[in-house]
Length: 559
Image 1 (cartoon, helix red, strand yellow):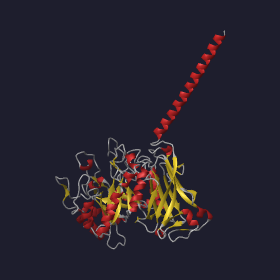
Image 2 (cartoon, rainbow, N blue to C red):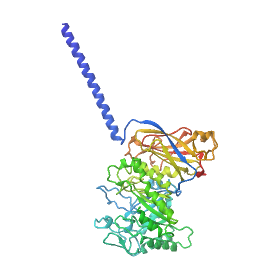
Image 3 (cartoon, one colour):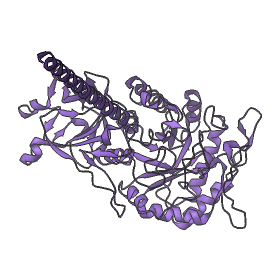
Image 4 (cartoon, one colour):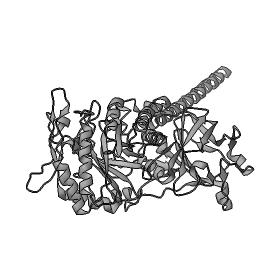
């Protein structure tokens, strides 16, 4: 009997043990599933750690100055059947068919007050402008044609609609003219012959007679250097620019404010640009270059490039080289980025229109301004997979809010910065816009580390550094704290941008932990900061972006 009882107890213990083991492995399996889910929702999911770093700011003089309306976005010509890698991402976002009555579109532009808009793109060199009594046909897909489409036409009724809309929205607009009109394509692929300016002259005269305001006329798209589709020689292009400049001058005779002449709107080629700029010392006001330094949109490693500090650093070469050419040439022309979509052939869905792209975009803005680039035009405002606005719904993508924050916070003068501790923090500083003080942009490319950032300004007179804390007790020539209300004196304003669910592919962005979304009427949400103690370090979470405005701190470059 005792033996039977013992066997029963042993069996019970074994069953209990098996039950507990089963429960344990079930729990382990559940945890594994949750972990895998989280990994699938986020490009980077690792435990966070915290470390300190110092941002050094040299405020003795600015290193670059932008236009006050530095932020610009493009509108293109591509029809709905423009497709890349089997995907047709343009919808009805063309200059010819964009819904100009959409309230989100209007409000999105008005929020900048003003937003520069560049009208142009690949097909601009195949566009004619309607003239009375002549046919005006739309683009037709044709694989045998250059750029894959037939010649298209801009109806003057649509030109009227666009200009009426831009005036209502308060936009500052430039327009890209057809530079291939009258030319032929040689056997070597180059465009030869003189430019026929009759179409351009007709459009400019019509525009002036209608009272429309155009900030600048740009001749040609991606015809510099090796060109895209075809190319123009650096010794031919300047004569065409001189022709355009004369047309603009003559039609605007008696006008105090005349439109700018821009060119070449192409990829940077140092030798070509040097020759071109040397031959247009008085006829060209703006030198425009295009940037797609991430490669083709089909690339599956775009995010790796975006999060690689060394890869981002490589983007400075084009800015630096163009700045050097302009300085040595004696021209009065300034540099713009006329088009920049990062990844060519319409970008990459859920990358170039998602939160992760703000790392590349804002870094480009910071870098460009540091090299005296006056305007930076993002490809696109809407259309393709790199729009600031969703092509179908018009709802802003994350980069829209990044652009708007830059526009509202970062002033014209760029300051030199350096960050100690890691290369994963990208740091930029400008004099603040519309207020005294400085504004910082901090981009954390690290998916594992929170950085506690202290700020230091270099005092060259004493060959040392002073931190923000030391401003309380010192009266430096280099910088000073302005005394205002107790609240203003002891706080700064911060704007923290993060992806929804920490998903880098998300098209929803959080500002200080709150989702940014348009209202039911299409109104752009307010972008409100949080107040943080002035002498606390700036906390930059993994894979996040922070703007910090310090209004009560000034440096000589910002006075």
